[in-house]
Length: 323
Image (cartoon, rainbow, N blue to C red; front, top):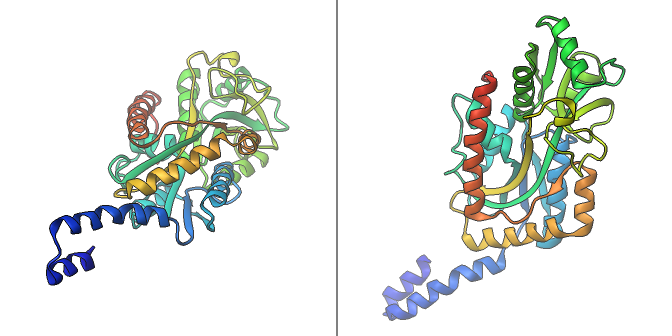
């Protein structure tokens, strides 16, 4: 840009010629993207359910972009660390946040007193990717076989029962269940889903709300009102007596604010192809997520704002404690 302006001043180029040169510059840059490796940032530990979902989309992006896609794990602060990393990155399309926006943006903005980023104004929404229910899990050897059994057990423990939570949606799901069921239990924070799962296997907690594909725990019910293709055979919350309970997580891709529209659109197109790919869809279901296409750009921003309002109401209703 600067060289074009300088050439115009020195050489006396006509304003119209300069305008044409500038107008052609942006598509050329978009056409060259990507010219180097892309980094996808994830706010969960390697090997967790969310991490595996992000890696699936990172691999699909690699196929279409023709460049190496590096997955950078930045767990901590219920994904706020990863989101801040992207919010402050250069907005050139080479640093992407793939995250459950339901947690990182909607729930975190409701439960944290201060956020290190603005969920709406510090990001450029790219594309919706997938949705997933969560599941109520108890230890494999537990005598608890239903939500009713879990409720009775926690009532018998008179507030001394424990649950684990590795992320914000897990925390809210457990607290909302406590409110609906009229029970009390102590919440214990874990850095990752595998850590919380390990606590469950070791009988350190009575239950936790985790990924539907977790092995080594007994799955009592989903957190959604209806059954899900992502968890064949698992009973819904309604089937287990939680009639008004309907919580799910959604994954989407975001760039830092100020990302070039043409780069954003190119990425949105690649992600749309990924979600529609039959083999990718099969792998998604194996990981416990269902494809969620078609919400891009400003529509995704509006959806995020709506989700922030919804989860604020739920968090206030459940009286979710600040992390």
